[in-house]
Each structure stands twice: as structure tokens, then as C-alpha cells.
Length: 184
Ligand code: 5HM
Image 1 (cartoon, rainbow, N blue to C red):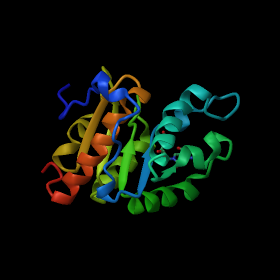
Image 2: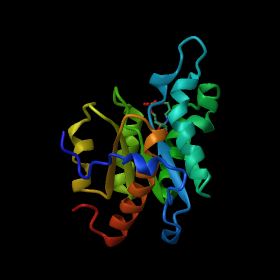
Image 3: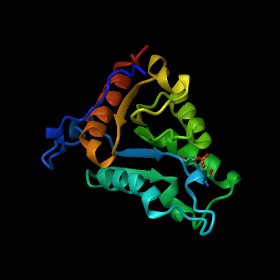
């Protein structure tokens, strides 16, 4: 699958001296989306530690840079305080509208809720970063979203190892959105 541009983090970028998201861009908030229901343990109704990890890593990474992060998984206590559909739908849409950047793991298998949110974010003309697992197939409209919206893709095998690439993708998505090109 040809994705533009491929974000393979060079090993050298994995160092703690990574510059992070450009402070001069004034990015204050991020909405972080990704699979939820499919990750709940049927026994406990909660996300196991391994399923929480990518969200946890990204939340901590963004918050360490002073960004405010809205993430439903954390908000709903990783499944322990699951909201009803009529509670979370408008809340999520409002938070995506307010966010400076939208970051999503579309999921494999595809997360239905996340795909709706990706649609909202692109319709709201948000800068979008999509975190795609290497060697997974994603639906055509995810592969092609950069032709109609300000999208950067980060193809990865490990979220923690690609954080510098995520920061760079955030910068580029924001710059592209401000240029008004949106990849179009
Ligand atoms: O269909 P799925 O559960 O994978 O949808 C996940 C996305 O929908 C998340 O990005 C989250 O923002 C939103 N969501 C939510 O806010 C989903 C559920 C359950 O479907 C929920 N709250 N309880």
C-alpha cells in the first residue's frame, strides 16, 4: 500500500532529545481516537493493560508537551465507566470540533466509532494524524483521505518507538491545514 509520506522513524529519532511538536504552532489540544468496544475484556468489561498501552503512551507524550488531551478511553475509565451512546456521541463530536488536532488509530479490525470520528474530523477540516500498523490493510477512504483533508500517516510497528514521527506528523498536518491545501 503506497502511503504518502511513509513515516518510518529513523532509529536516531528515538532519542529523548527529540524536539517534539513545534511550540510556535500554538497547538493546545488533541482528540485521540481509536478502537474501544473491541478491546474490552468480556470478563471484566475493561481494557486490559496491553490494550491501554498505546493510548497511555500517546496521552502521556502529548501531555508532557503541555497539550490538553481528550480521549474517551481514559474518560470512561478504560471501560469501567462506559457511557451510553446518547451520552458519548455528542460529547465526542463537540470535543473533536474544539480540538486543534485529531489523532486516530483506525484499528485492525476497523473500529466503527473511530471511522465515524475520522469522517467528522475531516468534515470539520481538522489537521489529522492517522497511526497505521505496518502490513495491515486499511479501507480505501482511509488510504485516500489525504486527497480531501489535511492528513499525515504514521506507519509503525510500535507506538512508543514512533513518537518523534507522530510529533513531526502533527506539525505537518497543522501546517498543511493552515496553508489551506489539505492535500487537495
Ligand atoms: O466502535 P468503537 O467502540 O471502536 O469506537 C471507538 C471510538 O468511539 C473512540 O475513538 C471513542 O472516542 C468513541 N467512543 C466513545 O467515546 C466509543 C464508545 C463505545 O463504542 C464509547 N465512547 N463508549
